[in-house]
Image (cartoon, rainbow, N blue to C red; front, side, top):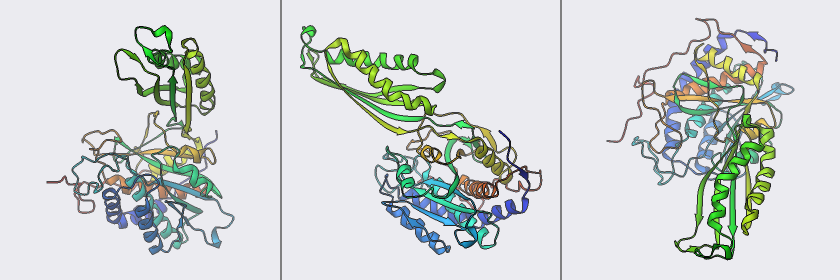
Length: 435
């Protein structure tokens, strides 16, 4: 594929850097407010209203989405008619787990925590929106931009599909997003062309029979034995029926059947997730699972019911979009800021946007250099808040480059003016633990 046109725009990069720096303390406070008041999927009313008020104060007109979430156009006045529109997306919801980080701005709501970094994404996108509004006011925004604050990423079905049906992608040519990566140092971002996350579907099998005594298994369907056959054989069948290069993985997470050692139960259930890195293989997987379950259990005289719930397709980053956001990162952060990220079998409903328009999701480093590594969805996770300003700069710069239809090359000493500030420099106070 031919590379995008090349240009250098150091003045715009410096302007974005300066604009974000001027609001960075506010963005950190926004993040801490969201972090202390997490809201579950489709219940993000407080976050939605808070963001809407801040955007209105900036002179923007956010549109509230049905339920929760919002979208806001920048550069949507008559000057932008006929021009391209670029979308930027963040997600709002928290996870149903208890925070144990000890931070002074820890969750105030029992059993809820921002342990995936959505509060980081949201603050970064707010910063990008305010920065792009300032550029537009100065006549420096080359295209329209739509910022989407999406609810319900952590559940299935996720919020992306509902957002799309409400017209969030109308007129959009490309879309970009960030996802926190607590195993990558702050100041670096990981990108990849092609599949970066996997499809994720829920598989539940219920097996039933009349039940009976364990001394006479031949007089009934042995539910426990049948479930055992499925546990081992179904993943093996998928490994031979589907292309192994697609990264198909079926892992069981729950099995329930019976209570007594001497009684064959009348029913049992088996549940897990099927993940896949190839969208075409993902489309075929459900039918193969259904046929295989029936064939594996056919000899055992049991009744079977299969629930196969489609989750999300894989996030497949488009090559030109990756090159654009990579160029933005190098321009606004530095030439060594982009690293190749690993593929993940985790699911992300940003994938639904990419089934409609090209775009890219990249991973935002949130680990303090030299500090501990965390995994996402842990109650004790701590994110380096300097990543917020970096995310805001990257999103804003990406929107400008994509709006121009250009990529850039950074001349050392020109555009790459950003330097990672030390923790506790007065701009971004350290996330102090509770006493």
